[in-house]
Image 1 (cartoon, rainbow, N blue to C red):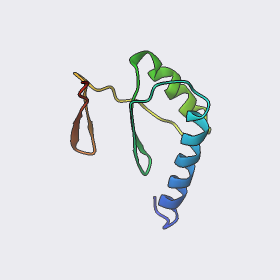
Image 2: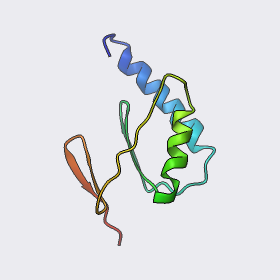
Image 3: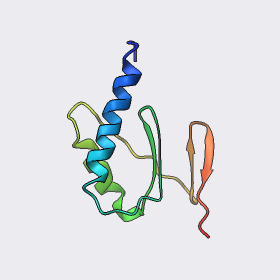
Image 4: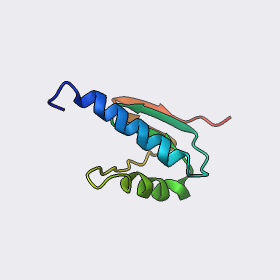
Length: 86
């Protein structure tokens, strides 16, 4: 993140990654939010590993990790997000 182009390149790469991965999967994504290279996804529990594997096969030098929420909530940039199902 030292170069002025870093945020622009990160934005382009993550946008391309999103388009390639989400166009080839049949998964119900409840929430998708991204800020630079941090991504918030809400998907069914049984499909988390499949999505993580797809993200991690995009490029050899990119590695994504998963943080699981608890009790239908997760912290994202110092904000506690609570998923309410009606």
